[in-house]
Length: 89
Image 1 (tube, rainbow, N blue to C red):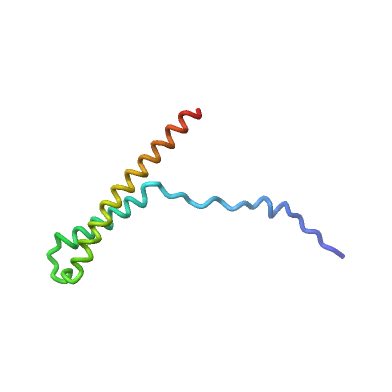
Image 2 (image 1 turned 90 degrees about the vertical axis):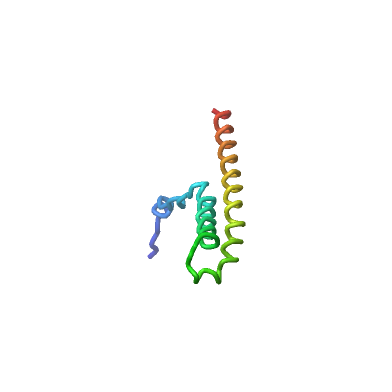
């Protein structure tokens, strides 16, 4: 006695594609952390933050230009992709 299993039920169950994130998500996160470090390093009046002042200042020096550069590269790449799509139509 053999039991035959059909593969049709397995073939029909296709998992949905993973969710996509926006191309500007990473530069926005960098900018938010950079602004946070900028505030904590330069503008806060909390005396407890003096222990972390150098870290926050360096963080703002690194994260804010990085976010601006990455935003520019993402914008440039998105614009190039749109022009290629327009040429193909």
